[in-house]
Length: 276
Ligand code: 13P
Ligand code: ZN
Image (cartoon, rainbow, N blue to C red; front, side, top):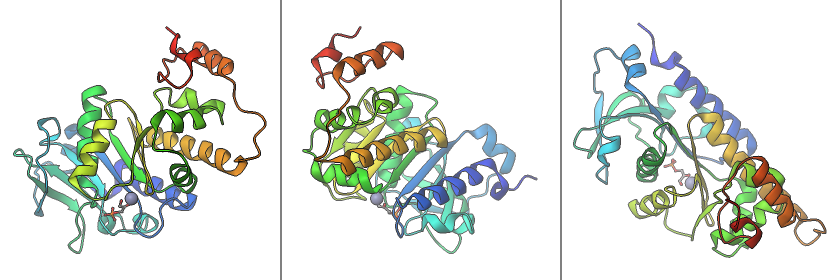
């Protein structure tokens, strides 16, 4: 029988958390990740599913995610420790058919539970699955320069997007839909989960002012790459702040959109709004 600890899913989680920690984004227990795993894979590791224990949830999960399995980082756990002890720092849960409880199938050894941001994760999966049935990853982290930009930019999606798009030609190519922005809110609540999920109907990245960022993707590379591009661009913006003599002009943004067949967020530059 294949052991889940040896699965590519645990490996992907271990590698990405170690990498994110090395970037300096996930201090202490900062950050959390959830990975939707299809039943065809779950069956290979758990032919007869045994529930270790039930973990209550504070919200009712949407039918689209009920009876689905997620590998999720544990609350209070440190990204730097996932690689050396995945079974303590991660857990595999199946959302119950009634949507109110999570059945623990593997992990959270020693009595742990899923991240305090579980509502945001499951609600974001719900909304992303409605627009992209292949979405598997929701990733939350605290990247330094993105947080600096959040603190120094008005709470405005258009303004945040404009600053990023004009600092790095990769930005508009990687996130033509722009970046969603939420004001500073109490984290770990159903409310911030609901607000983030609403943004995720339109955006694949959402900045939490004074806290961090949420990203998503079909796989770990995609979600990480999205956040990495935002963070790199924010770094360029913040380091060059006040000294900039060259910003990317709208005509180059138009050229990039035409080259890559992009439909960029409206309202940032009038030159981009006319692209068909
Ligand atoms: P958890 O340890 O509960 O995952 O919380 C970390 C965090 O980043 C909260 O937003
Ligand atoms: Zn956080």
